[in-house]
Image (tube, rainbow, N blue to C red):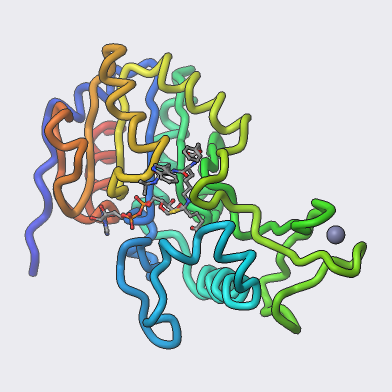
Length: 254
Ligand code: BJW
Ligand code: ZN
């Protein structure tokens, strides 16, 4: 039996008195749901590929068959798994904050939609979603059915040469303008910022914690391991978020 992670009192107190909380999540939050994080090695038929090299416009241009198969596989994986207690605890925390007329913004780098499935409402999808796709040529939008495509790469119904791509943000692409604006607003107005389950190496999200701290917010972190934010954080919990978040939220809302 593993022991339960210690929840720092300073974190509980800061959350209890926060007027606007900003949470940033990454792939680690969905790890306990059974979804691989971005920097985990892939397994099975994907073992020979590096996710970092698949998540680029260049990879899609070069090999749309491979890249769309990978995203289609991930839509399928998402359908086989469900949100974990960490996702549910964040939804509970949002409910508690909003019932008290306090601000709450959840910025996620995840594209799996699990926060919304768990009941979170104010979710900003910084890197988009794999649940909707668009034609790379004419931009017609499609909702993924959840079942594998009939052929790869999937084709647009409107234009003969159009190939569909997921509505995600790849390296070298700009984040959606609305998402960036909402993130900047939340960072400017939050008094507490928590980074959860992200390696903190992908811009611009990797600079949010530092920016919030520079404006006077308390900065906390939950991650299995130390990250570049750890030294800057007021306190960190190094434990699985699916274990730590329910404990934290129980104490805050008690
Ligand atoms: C647990 C846990 C548990 C595990 N509990 N914790 C040079 C050339 C071109 C671009 C750049 C460049 N230098 C910098 C850039 C900018 C670039 C960038 O930052 N690159 C760095 C890699 C250097 N950024 C961009 O291009 C962004 N756009 C941009 O900046 O536009 C302006 C611009 C354009 C061009 C040039 C310069 C500027 C866009 C970034 C888009 C990222 N997209 C992806 C793919 C999305 C679709 C998909 O999912 O496939 O987003 S990449 C990938 O990384 C994905 C993730 O959202 C993102 C972050 O990963 P995350 O979530 O942190 O996951 P991991 O796996 O890294 O970490 C998991 C963590 O969880 C670990 O710390 C574990 O310890 C922890 N963990 N289990 C708690 N149970
Ligand atoms: Zn089209």
